[in-house]
Image (cartoon, rainbow, N blue to C red; front, side, top):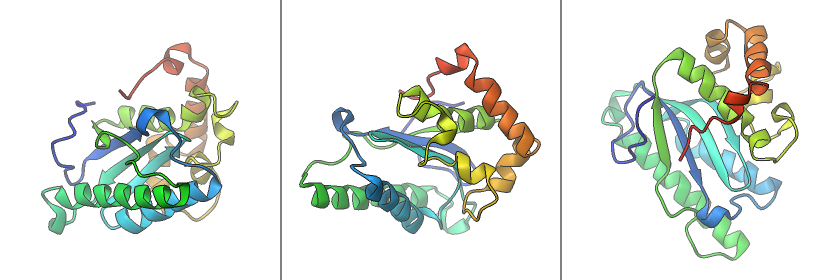
Amino acid sequence: MSNRNIITPLLPDKYYHIYNYCNDHNEIFLNRNFYLLFLEKYDEYLSDYLDTYAYCILPDHFHFLVRIKPNHLFSNGLGASNQLRKFFISYSLCLNKRAGRSDPISKKYYRKVEVDTTEDLKQMIMYIHYNPQKHGVCKSFDQYYFSSFKALVKPCNTKLRKKEVLSWFNGLEGFLKYHWYLSHKQEFMKMALED
């Protein structure tokens, strides 16, 4: 995986782990409706600019694994970068209005890490799904509602790149085995793929 440089643009056809924390680890999502609003705005602002492979949104931070769409109109990557900025501003304004706040939700720009091998993509998906358990939000990551895990394992309609994700694991059975295996490995549980 490459460095966490936030200044370089998001490049077409590249995969990125995009994440951020709220100021002082305050909550970004005050109740279920805020989680749904965040995902709604994510779709509204970003579905034309990137494909989503995995996500997890927690009370004070979020993770997405995405690929920037190879559209010639956004070839310099600024289209996706600008849309991400607009998305975060839009959600922040809604949160502040409904919660009576005035601060931006985070002090820094979103963070990103390019992910460039299939093995790294697999580990990143597992890492993203494991986050609720890692942070003590739930006892078992597979029970967490605001993550892509259930949408990837259940037969349901989703905008996630499900077929592609499952192909990296040689199908659903491989996807599940990989998740159960890594969720019990001590070295994986200590893994830190973010600042």
